[in-house]
Length: 224
Image 1 (tube, rainbow, N blue to C red):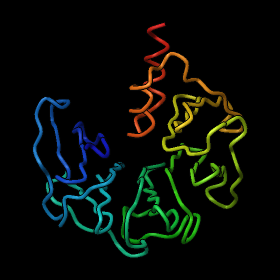
Image 2: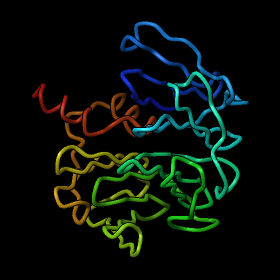
Image 3: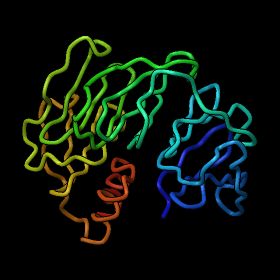
């Protein structure tokens, strides 16, 4: 099972929950394993910024500055355990823990600070743009437009709050939940369901595997 896909320095990276990280130089035609230094091959998610690639494992969050040839564990400040999603926003890295909140590093993992939430909050996913950051937890989506100083609920129009995937394209925001795919044209203030035209098998892949829902929905529109 492929847990995540990321692009960095013209390489394609794929993570797996049993065989670690693989890298492709040719758009997926060929792959090699790049696990040196990881210490485990249980990798749940990937992220990348201008400095390197980041991988979340059962043993912590690791980083590589040489395209995955070598990995080292990042610094202090993170809670131990399982991170459901790591992502890069404005070159900072955010790590969303399944039950311990969201953490942020501004220095490529030298150290981390708590960004939002606390112990016990069940997190589904996180997503950020240049001006907003979203956290999907059980029963709501939280949105901040001031770098985490304040958070507000952004669920108007969502008929299912189990949002497992968030993505954007230009000024449009998309959410994938077990109840459908939803679209917002006002940074999450209002949502409408846009699943018409997707068959059940495609829908299950989008929602349950965390696929970039905006790119998939655009392809559906192009075929109509």
